Length: 509
Image 1 (spheres, rainbow, N blue to C red):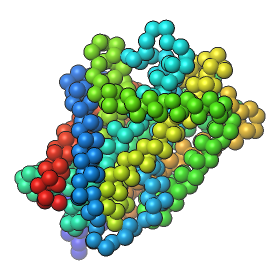
Image 2 (image 1 turned 45 degrees about the vertical axis):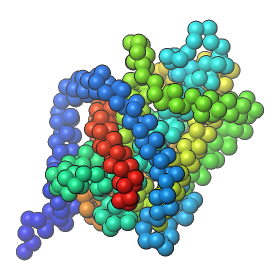
Image 3 (image 1 turned 120 degrees about the vertical axis):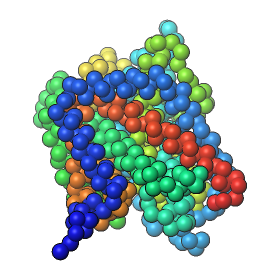
């Protein structure tokens, strides 16, 4: 007769870390459901405390990661292969980049691409009085590119590299605790410290992915409303969004069970091609010459201004509020996603060199993202002028309405329906890709990668947290959860950056 440990292992709870994680997430879900109002107040209080005490630390952390990555890319260690010296990559370059793009950014692109440039063009600390609509548009697009550009990817790549070296070169298991394996021996070998890091990674992944799913469920709600004829005038319904999340959970679990080589790779490839198709349609339907000129100008602006923006720390109250709502939220959101994405990058990057990982993952997805944000954001800005501010008014009602408002301005009749349906399908598949990738990583963290029960639990847990955060405050609660969980992950990231750099410079890698 099997003992208790055998029974727990069969249902996906083979280790103390797995049991604590399941118990902790379950308690959070139950307590939050029982005390929704108090959960909202607690999140808001914690968010305010983190912002007031750690804004400078968030700003510095993104720059530290980039500096360390530049050093590693130029250092001879860049030739080191992540695996055996003669090992070839497991996935082809095209599939590798598609999976990186889908797992690392996913549906948040559609939520923010049309709304964020309009919001920045209307108000930001760098906007001068009397600015022309054209200069305000360029500034809005530049700030959007900054939030989605190289600084965020730097968090992912640094952690992925710190994990990949001990995993692929030293045979260590794929766990987030390996991010500090090149650091002090006490941190690398302590079971308590390692378990704590893995638990932090689990909570960060749950909160980060739940934030994305919650935001994207709002976008999908807007596209569905437009498909049934209610357009941008209809209020969004949390009940519909919870239903969307439930459907995503079921399909995401099924995809995760099928594995990386089947479900996740196939969905990522489909997403990539559909994304390219949607981009091309926007180019053809919009003011092509003006949009391309705006993208080029804003891209140059971004490259020139990125260092200064990266070190900007607000001083006035209004500027501090803007930075908290935007830059700090984004850096915390990227950090919350870092355990999940860094482990996923490490998982699919075996056989690549250090330089390939640093340069490929930092620059290629960043370049694609900037083109995406420039195209969709630029289209939204130009279309808003032609529509006398109609898109801005829709965005002010709810950020999720931005994409639908732009499509309805670009096309009418059946063409508008086709575009909205394509955006809706893309949102849905991106949501599934995010959830199934997160489920896979969560199971890897706990040593339960082959257990279907564990995949089912974590898929449902992420979906439940997303639904709860929507219920306790929507966007504000989603932002607060990311900021709160981002702070401890920021500390881990800084220790990892220092440890990895010292190990390389001292020849220990």
